[in-house]
Amino acid sequence: MSRKGWLIGGAVVVVVAIVVALIVVSVSGGNDSSGSASASEISGVESAVALTKGIPQSGFAIGKPGAPVTVREFIDPQCPVCKAASTKTVPAIIKGPVKDGTARLIIEPLTFIGSDSTTGALAIAAAAQQDKAFTYTEILYANQGQENSGWVTEEVLTGIAGKTPGLDVEAWKAARGGSAASDAVFASGDRGQQAGVSATPTFVIKGPGGTKVVTGAVDPTQVLDAIKAVS
Image 1 (cartoon, helix red, strand yellow):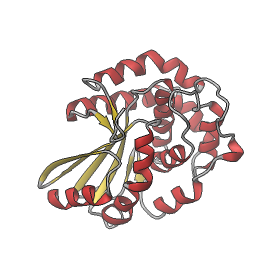
Image 2 (cartoon, one colour):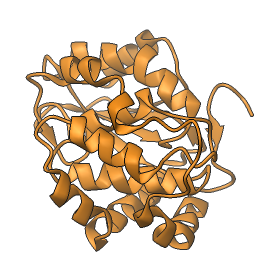
Image 3 (cartoon, rainbow, N blue to C red):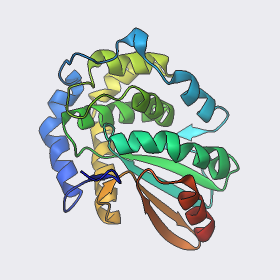
Image 4 (tube, rainbow, N blue to C red):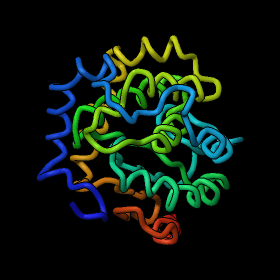
């Protein structure tokens, strides 16, 4: 598989089908797997909190609601290239145009790789209901295991929830099994299909000057330049 990104197949509609097939598995937390981080071993909390400090979050978005540019990042929770982008590409976007109000970043979780993808996407969607999706996702990436290994366990997901500042863990647990979380994941799949997304991560940058698309864990200047071009 190309290191540029995880291919989604011919259409993101496949993602939606996977969500349907795996929804029951997802709510239960997936399969157990040796090598998964325990709640006491959750890492990446300090860096995620520092990155998001002082920046408003709402649903899947981080940044000023009225920002002229919208950056939609289509991800798969267990995509290793998405994890790379979270440390190589995204911080500069947050510290620059998101923090200064030029752009708003919105996470769009897709579920192509397997059952762990669906489990993770629903966990992110549940965190989004408390406006903590971005922080939760960053911590999830920091604790990412090998794809399709069953690393997204109940213990790991709940451990991350417990380490996400301001997140009500019991409300988050209830939300994971609700229709709002699954509907949100379906909606992300629909938007990915409409945007022609064929790999993760894909950044779809839209502003007054048009739309640009950047794919992969790229040098942040590629996304920053695209933001300037559409501003």
